[in-house]
Image (cartoon, rainbow over all chains, first blue to last red):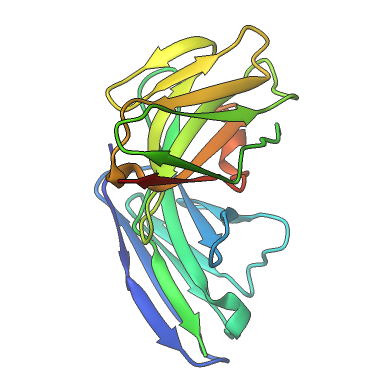
Length: 116
Length: 112
């Protein structure tokens, strides 16, 4: 299994500012994923980050709002830009894993963001 | 991608067996069924995955009928610490299709 850490664990930010969330994995992985989980809701995939290429964004999410970096096989960052109160959510990163024949995901603990 | 339907919430008592059923009527041939558990303030945690019939691990069992249009997660003798949200996902793990859709999940509340 993969061990994933995220920084910061939580933050309170003012609207109009930006926050960069870091995700560190204890092993090399090809793909990393960023999710958003709004209060009391399920998870929504924001984008898939491959090392050495541009991130692939899901419908409703754009690079200008959520720029992603993937400088190496163990690290990624997600920036939430020009924040508004609607961006208040938990942001989670995940990686693929699993035994032969089937893939699963391992998730980080999440970054709890409150925008005032 | 196959959509899933689960009960929104369930209540149980300590020591009981809990069965959570997930409907996935348009499951595709290559799709697997995966269940995750999420505690408050934590990321989801993989519980179990299966393709057909029955799968059992140290945490749970997964029952999948022959038509694969539904699946049932069985938690034996639940404790208070099993209070969590349980998500059922369906998709092809090879192509990564299952990554994109987390349903609403089932909130299980275990009472003393």
